[in-house]
Length: 291
Image 1 (tube, rainbow, N blue to C red):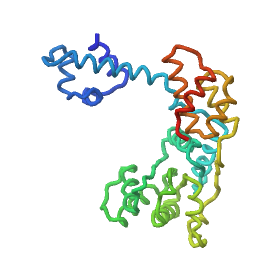
Image 2 (image 1 turned 120 degrees about the horizontal axis):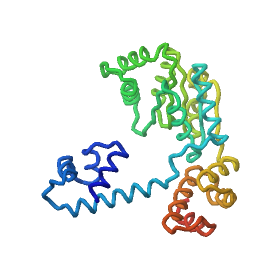
Image 3 (image 1 turned 120 degrees about the vertical axis):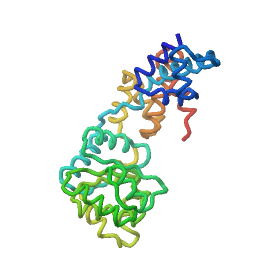
Image 4 (image 1 turned 30 degrees about the horizontal axis):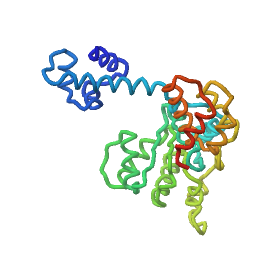
């Protein structure tokens, strides 16, 4: 029975035996023998691991976190990307954490094959930025900054591509200058997305970074919180009812990330308890979230 469950899991996910072995904590050769029914070791332990894995997968099937909902705020983010893409412009998308920026940006990238999306980490230097761009573009070149930048520009020139850089507030001035030069020389659109301080970073404390800031065509500011219309659409899509919109708006504080966690948790509680969603269930899960 467990062997059949594992075969079904492999077929459904398209995973290799090595990948499944990593999930279960066994080597690919052990998984191969197990599936053939020739494994001479502790079969019961693998049976147990397979049962636990398939139960987790069944639980994840109720998760609402990955579904994109075209709220008014998300649509405006998509529109900003579209303007930058069509006009080969530089644009900003700024807003506090938890407003759904990244999900909307990823949705735009998923809809358009000629989009390159880069998510910045706190460790990014100018060299790391260029290395990541080379990797994303499939560029092989010498690893000094000048060679990498030249190769990136040549790859992008005339390509009509869009470069989306998420969490761009983490970039150094030198890295932002590199993106400006890529925009100028390659003639592509660039969307810089991040926290509100990104706009201040691009201006400079004394307005000394005019060469960068002057390239910005438009700024899409998501403000401080999600509007009620967005929250209503997200809640109704996840729960299939508008009965709890007002309560969820209050306990989420208009934060998309907190709302997403609430909806996931509430949905999970309803499945576990085999019961409909209630206000008490919402309040119970809200109390467990960190403010």
